[in-house]
Image 1: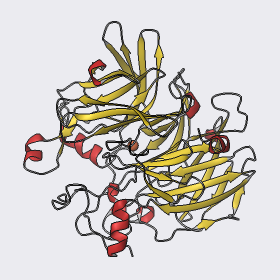
Image 2 (image 1 turned 180 degrees about the vertical axis):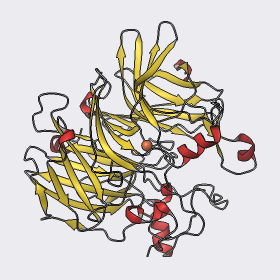
Image 3 (image 1 turned 45 degrees about the horizontal axis):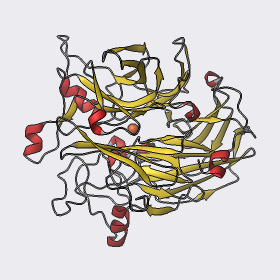
Length: 476
Ligand SMILES: [Fe+2]
């Protein structure tokens, strides 16, 4: 079904797609799965079903969800493709109908010039999983118990735009806070879905031109939207080509908007030019709105000048070189203070205890990255940062192990922010197998407390979420 191109590093080894959807129980475990770990770890990722013509980019594959269901010391795994409109069209045709992002878009499909795969992100909102795509697309509702796709989510027809990956759920209010971006003015919009699964707020956000934001941040009263100086080469875009460029002389801008504010109320704060894939968290502190995130380190030429071409290439291929960073936006003075929290480790794909989102948190759990140059993105370990002191503890079994984004999974009746576990799909190159690894979040440096040995590979992928049994039952 999948013709594997042996020369493309993101189509080989554990990047290669799998063909089977399975449900697996009675899995062999080394160590012990904690009995007070109850809920589901779900990770989205790219898993191409039909080989297509043209160059393949890791971001091109069809979305596939991998769920590890923990209950009273036992685990069950299942995987399902996200049955998007494009997936169903290709399934009907029995072949690929779109090429990848490195090839020209389909001119005969203005509704979907690039294949919208919903392969990037997954969150739990109002009783359902929702899958999202990094270029902003349709979103899909998925049954959290079976991973069966219910269909496109429009919130009863109240959603009038597309939605980007990294839209966020506020577990305190049950709201889903979303953004959309694209190539036509005003280039961005922003909105809120209520716990009743209806869009309760929506507003256009005017940007100076088309941008490629990847994330947003939320505090209790505000959202922070990103206008970063990495965007299309406008000459190439006018000629119909997609070429991404880093404008190293253009400030980054972060827009602070009240959660239910209008686009006209947004306040833009300038910061040093940078690109940020992922936010860690944000909160309010007196007159300041504080945001922590993983900020790309600007690559430089031998002369010391920024190297914008290399920067754009790294970002386009998810070659991470990022440090933990903090921005403080002063609502009274309109000024920004910024600086690194740690400038030693290259770490990305940050996760926190999601109950602390919008509030000041202490712990960030990130994936350690191999430094450029590498043939493919390498997610080589896990690190727990203490944002208060700058200390960290890390774990890796070697540079060719591959760790998935590891959300914090609280213990039943947790006593503190880090009272729980981390769960990750790990590729073990020594044994050529995937494992589900469980770490005690307080002692991740000691290694996993349980390794679940997988008879089927879980290919390397993107974003994950933890949904506790309590949230699954309450739907919030
Ligand atoms: Fe992302």
